[in-house]
Structure formats: structure tokens, C-alpha cells
Image 1 (cartoon, rainbow, N blue to C red):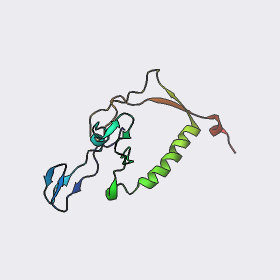
Image 2: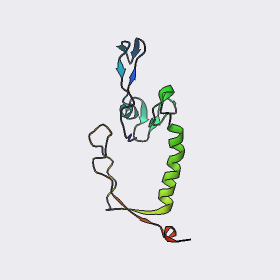
Image 3: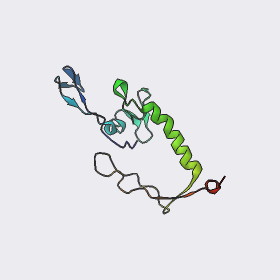
Image 4: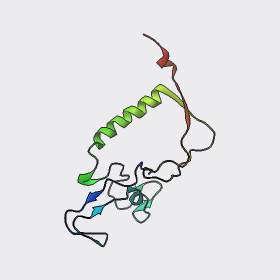
Length: 131
């Protein structure tokens, strides 16, 4: 729901075509706004939940889609679980304050958070043992 980069990698049309009712001449640079697609209430029944109304099965598009999708998607999907699991297993995490995490977006090409996330972590005792 909160892509790091709202725009996918630019593509160039190889032939004249029509996209969304607009004529696109050969050689035109095309930029896909993934954030706008993911947050369009005309395409999704419940934008906040990410539930698609047309049964496509693509709830989110962090790596693009189709034949021009990210070639590293498979590796990223496998490694992300290992990294997240290691962070959860090896550290104890706490929020700095009691307020909920602010998910509002700032300005910029990579859509930074408006209020940076701050958290405290300390290594779990198992990490301090020596062999």
C-alpha cells in the first residue's frame, strides 16, 4: 500500500498504440504510476484493504507486473522473510512513544514518510552468549 517508489521504471513504446483511450506514438516514454493504480477506488472495492474487485489477483505491485516486472522479485520475496525473521528473533523492539505510527507520505520521488519511524531495539540475551 505504501510503495517506496510510486513510479515504475520508464518504458518506451515500440509501436503506435492506444492506452486508456489516448493515442501513444511510437518512441514515446511511458511512466506507470503504481501508487495511483493501487489507490484507485474505481479499480478496488476497498482501497485501504487492497482487495481487488475484478479478481485479477494482484493486490499490490511492489515489483511491477507482466513481462517487464522486476527480475529480482523472486529473490526479494525469499530474502525478505529471512531478514524480517532475523530482526524479530534477534532483537526486542519498542516504539519511542505511545502514539500510533504515522503512515502519511512526504514529498519526493521515493515517497519518504512525513514523520520518520523511530523505534528502540536491543539485542535479545541469547545474542550475548559466547562459545
